[in-house]
Length: 93
Image (cartoon, rainbow, N blue to C red; front, top):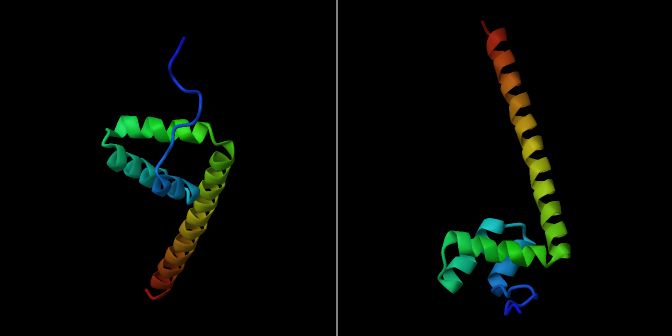
């Protein structure tokens, strides 16, 4: 028989809060500091926790999708602005 528990690993409250905000890297940092373990170990702990929490995983996916949409909008805005500046510079010649 295996002595491993089937329940989700406990995470520090700060790590859980970071995950709720979609910040996976911050959650891993917190776990590393609190448990004094390496990057790979902390990443494994956080991923195991996420695998056991489908609602939190769905929320993280939503946060990441929103961030990607905002980035694309920002990038399009910058490109439109740059095209406008380039147009004005070319008109000035």
